[in-house]
Amino acid sequence: MARGGAIRTWAHDRSGAAALETALVMPMFLTFVLGVFWLGWGLYCGADVRHAIERAARLYLTTPATTDTQFRSAVAANLTTVSISDVTLTVTKPTVSGATMAQIAWTYSYTLHIPFVSPVLLNFNSQIVAPVRPT
Image 1 (spheres, rainbow, N blue to C red):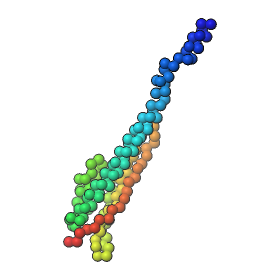
Image 2: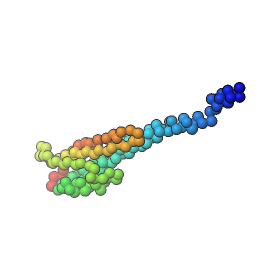
Image 3: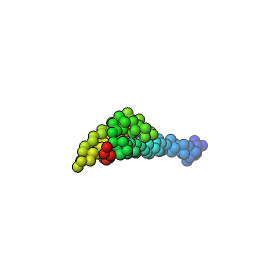
């Protein structure tokens, strides 16, 4: 009889329930929190690249003889979180109705590394058209 009472007492004991629930839920919670953080960081890096290129594109208005190397250096100077080596830039200067335009196409890729999840690649790309001031 004493043995049945001990088993019954053990079956109703809840002292380790919180620790077990925490151990089961914590990996999912950390994956969610870190995933939100890394996604936000990836979006921030993409916005940083876009902002740097838009700021550097103003160089064509002030200095019409800007070379591709000078433009790339201006973009690198405006980047705060991303290396210029991770950004692909293509600059063409077509003439439309007698006005020269600078067409700037760019791409940037960021890989999300979230625990327990396979890597996800975020691709950012856009094209900006800036007028080139006549000389």
